[in-house]
Length: 587
Image (cartoon, rainbow, N blue to C red):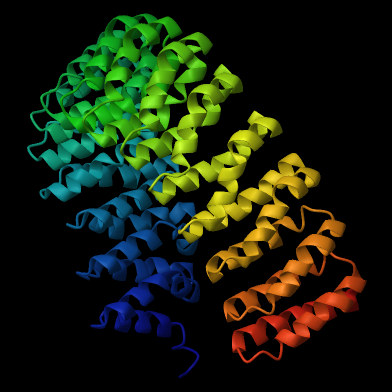
């Protein structure tokens, strides 16, 4: 091939591959667009590649999605921001396709390009594109247009700004619910770019129209607009315009709309200020907590702590706590679970007395809930309550329930308790721990579920770190070493795991005199799994013990294991022997 024809080669290959029946080839070709553009150079990319992509009528959504993504980062390949407008035609075409994810990606890429374009280019190229899409015959174009206004508006001259506001208003009244949905979704972003004077007059009337839409899917998106617009308006305007809408929405006939209100309500509270919150929004929130749809109660229950933080403690106790009590015995386990995941956070908000009097009974009833997720959610947040009421009261009221849960039939609940034990131990202190929880920690080493046994071994290590090696020598090591004779090999393996975790925490002397002999003895076990775990443990002990111990005790044992009939045992023994040689060479 001659040198003259060379630059034509990449585009020819691209054209061939983009017309290939094999979708993977077409995809690969699109993903290599940047490489092809570099090969062609900026001018030929503008004049040949981009027009070709504009005309490319591939019908596979995956290829179109990849193209929409690639074009978003293409400005450097067409000669920088002054030529960015050449990328708009292919993306405009992609904004009209039927597949939603392709349109969304095309809009995202247009926003990225538009945010880098020069102001006069936006007026000459970007704003006409937005107007064309907004007037599109097919609804997909109009849906895409809604997501571009916030980029187009700030650079437009005043006459164009008025036109853009008017077009957006028409889109909010479009015949197609999908277009109105898109307009409602993007209203907050567009409103953030509109001048305050027009915000109050025009944008608020658009918003009010959307809030009265006959489609619940449009109204629920308007709820999101409440919080976004609330942040842009003055508190008094919020009270006048946003508050009545939210209060109405909290009684909407569609549960989906009420669900959205339950999720967004605390954000509106911040926008309207304390007094309207107390008089208007607290009753609305109480209604949502008592809603007849479980989904709405779940959303409302999940926001209990955030809502209580906004209110004064006495208001929370008076209005919210009675509902919380009702929810703690709700017929839906998912409502109780949502409540359990946040209720602990209300303790610091309500203070010590209210927590002891009002919340503790609720915690206890949730700790005894029949549904494991509810119990789990309470356990995992116990430390928040401990900070408020102190460990004495916590241990008296909640510890019996914790001990009961340590033997829960659901292993995930037992696992959550184990993970909480070191924290509990540090809070209870060594004396209390030995009395109440010491036996449990040993019991878990012989659990039927591997995850529990493994967590129990890790738990012993963390306890040894917390209370010191002397305490561990008295309370943990003797009991652990006793279990090495368990008839079941899986439990013997757990003990080896516990030894490997405890050894770095204990002194070298204890490791050599107490732990190492047990490991060496286990090398004579008849189960290969135990033997290769012995090799692994010995390898982990090499850096901890003295060199002479390695040579006298560990190496002979490993040499013996390296001649074992089992291939895995030989492999791990040889690996450990190499580790010894490596340590010797480096020292």
